[in-house]
Image 1: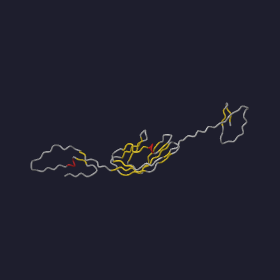
Image 2: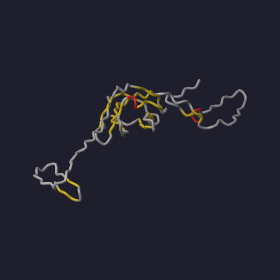
Image 3: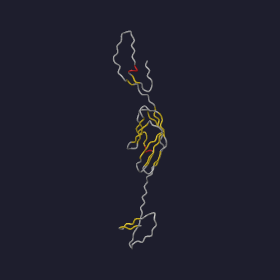
Image 4: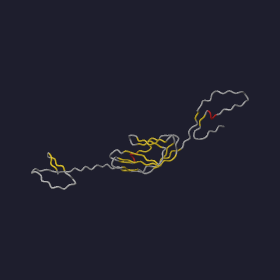
Length: 168
């Protein structure tokens, strides 16, 4: 113990005999226990969305994690193809990369600077959706002589979606 201006400083790891002046002094320790633990309380289910379509509110992280301190979330996946974003209410939007479809295995961690807790692994399936046929060039007015055939290369005017174009 050291005595300086009516304040005692205690070295916790040292044992020392102390002789105090005749005044009464009280030495007290306050122990503040903070509940800072994060709990994982559910199972995030497998889910799916369509290609080229963001899926808002895909996961509400508040349904799966509890913490008295707002945690920081991180997503881990086994491959690329999907972006995860979290809004201010801990709701997750997933956005597949353009024209990407397939399966991704993912999990989420929640950390608060003291500990990190991980969710179960879940699968996100991005379902292939046919892209529509698109007009890439306008077809101008065409004229031809009566009783004669004229060929028009339709592939010059239309862009295929995900499937080959067939005309009949």
